[in-house]
Length: 100
Length: 100
DNA sequence: TCGACAGGCAAGTGAATACTTGCCTATTGT
DNA sequence: ACAATAGGCAAGTATTCACTTGCCTGTCGA
Image (cartoon, rainbow over all chains, first blue to last red):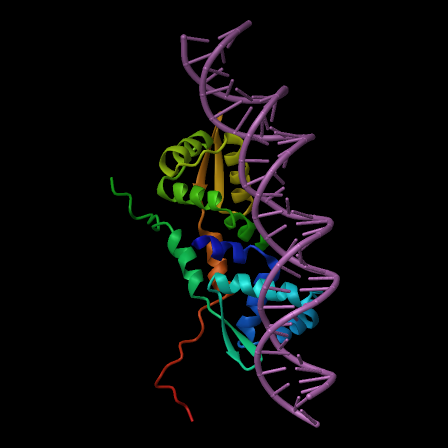
């Protein structure tokens, strides 16, 4: 459902994680933790970040690939398209278009 | 903040209200209530809808105009642009671009 | 093989929030 | 003037959800 997508975007920490992945793709859980702490001043436990990543993955916004004991996370912005598609911009009310 | 926008979109009922306003602009509170009930099968109180509209207005997704005792609600999709602007689509990995 | 590293699972807690109920204000028509 | 209509305010409740704590699994290097 679209519910997963919007629920995922509803949390500020998750949006910051998306920002991080947009800037540097393919980070591991620990890398994300470290960068949230140092660059964004977020004091947050590893498990909390892990749970956020689960939610983001359920929404299709994050894709993961495993290599050995490491799990890399990549951003996928495709689901965001559905938002602007659902509520498209209104047809431009052309001022010339005083038809009738 | 962007927080208002995403919080507003997080609720399924509010998204349905946006759908309704996208289809027919300028509805009053009671109109929205009636159409949520008949067309979407949502049994929800008037006050609940009113609270949702307050949230949507705070997010800038709904704009209102008063005329006498009636208050008309209009959809504004502009804030949605900021979402796709924040996480733009990645540069297309051109297959020809085996530079090196 | 053993310890360190990367991550997962699950229960518990506290805060945010969707919804209801009850009452109040303002405008309109008769 | 009065009733009906359109909407607002505020407190209470119940659910959702973010986060923590504690423990477990799997992989890599020495």
